[in-house]
Image (cartoon, rainbow, N blue to C red; front, top):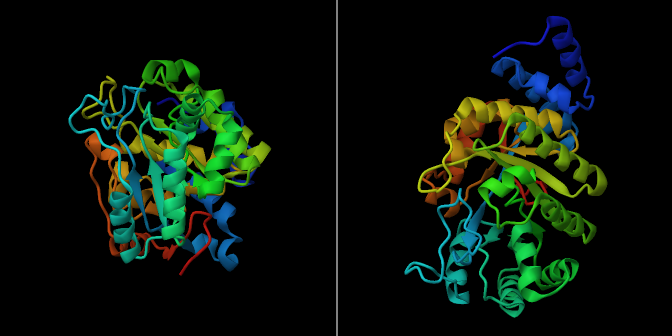
Length: 365
């Protein structure tokens, strides 16, 4: 990998250490640094961003949450090439969860101290708005201690089309019924030339960002994501980060950023998967670039516990979720699982204090 001239490298490093905003051109140059050097810069930016948090102890703390992924249906008519989870209604193993099945999952989550669910599903072509509102109301009324971190921008664009309602009205109704926050799923790469190759039936990048804009205006916080390592270029990744940063400047509603690499097994997308080094490089670059998103989450679910731990020195300040259930990424061949005690041990071994949090990154223990 070529290196930039030393004088330019020194000036750019000084810029990063000073906490200044970098440009896309700066990002391309930083990408050329040795991995360890880039990681150190990201770690310095992480510490700078977290220094004042948690009573001035933010640098010393790594947070995590106890939640559960619940996929209310696997029926989807978008047929993303990178997805091994979706089914059609003609498949024998398609499903839609009942309230009783939801209750069983939520009871199990409550029993281990869980406080949140990540509620997402496929783009079911025949479920109406009353079905969704009834599900949300049921969860809110029976499990008021559990935040519903639910759906995603592609799902909301799907809902608006199927329900024949304005997008803002759909999001507002879901919020009124119990939705507490929105995950950043379906972001992939926010460059339409890439999206048209990997998921041509999914919402475009402007539509994804519009959901987040409306949600933030309505008082719903959300996360932001990037799934990379398939058909995109480095410039596409940087363009994705730029769009997120611009959106955050405008609305301030992103609580965290999570990136992960494409998982190829059982999918239709033919791409050479990238390794853990590339994951760490992009997470570090993302921490530096996204100077207005306060939290970066380690993606141990796709990378494994050890790389997830190393990521704490490459810009991450959060270890994600205990995640007692995960169906989408595991369908593509990745099946890492960690209990609360294992997460806390990994955090301590990395030199940090583990603390549980809620969806808004407030400490709960």
